[in-house]
Image (tube, rainbow, N blue to C red; front, side, top):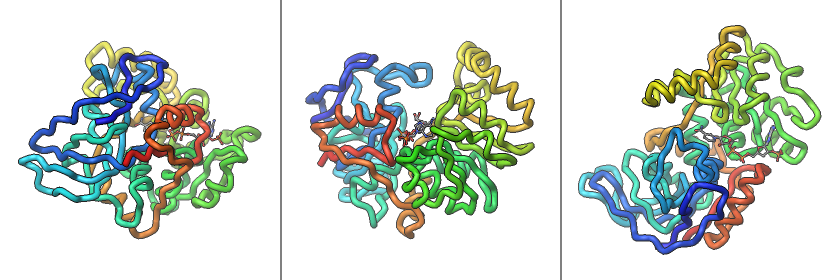
Length: 332
Ligand SMILES: NC(=O)c1ccc[n+]([C@@H]2O[C@H](COP(=O)([O-])OP(=O)(O)OC[C@H]3O[C@@H](n4cnc5c(N)ncnc54)[C@H](OP(=O)(O)O)[C@@H]3O)[C@@H](O)[C@H]2O)c1
């Protein structure tokens, strides 16, 4: 099958390769991929930036979510059959959606929302699950609460604004002029132009922050929270609590603990909770998201669809960090 691969870590372009078709295990289905989305994790993996958390063998097919059709079901698969239209974020040990086929565990899959095209459906799994896990599992966001969503115009942000509104929250978000109309159309209540305004001077007594930026923005987020507030970050540093839950050994846990000393001090100073989230695959949660989508509560937001042959161009566009919504590869 055709696939986009890397042969080693580093800023080297992906190459189009002929790879063996994936081997399927009993609890897996073989899916023909119709579309995949590009996520920053793809170039972070390529660059070797997440080696402490994820280890891969080379050559590696990149790509972390997709939509497609089941063409074969393993002997122990009970919930899917040949012909089902599905979408998924495969488990982290079995990525590789920039390809014509993939074997995926049935627990990681859900039926594709019926009202979406394959390209639209491929835009959802990774950002949708990330946001759902941040809001429902960690923040336990409630009606009437106030949340700041950083980078509202991005792949994660465009989904997050919509889910926060579905959950009844009041949403402030940061965007440049180029993203303002988009975030407004998605329901953002307050829009902060991050190029000319400082969110930390404009917001106070917030219940929650969804941080997609890390660094200084994350540190400043502590200032806008009320006592007992919560921050969930997908771009900050993993702390010792995360490392323990993730099963990192003693040295990695110590490393993360030292690297996040400042965040731990800020947690104490402001009496708020900081959680680093590394999203997990979940077919069950994708079924919940499909329901929001089929009832029209959440819509896919797509910046651009690239043909498979232009996968490297699509990756470069994603790396520019300027996308408004999601970048999609059309594979079939
Ligand atoms: N830990 C996890 O499990 C997990 C899961 C998903 C994503 N992530 C991480 O979350 C981050 C965001 O992902 P994404 O897919 O949303 O990225 P993305 O789509 O590439 O984000 C691009 C958007 O960010 C906006 N932006 C850039 N700098 C900004 C700033 N300083 N303030 C406000 N907006 C800014 C840009 O707006 P303008 O062009 O208008 O400036 C653009 O619309 C990435 O670092 C990704 O790795 C982590």
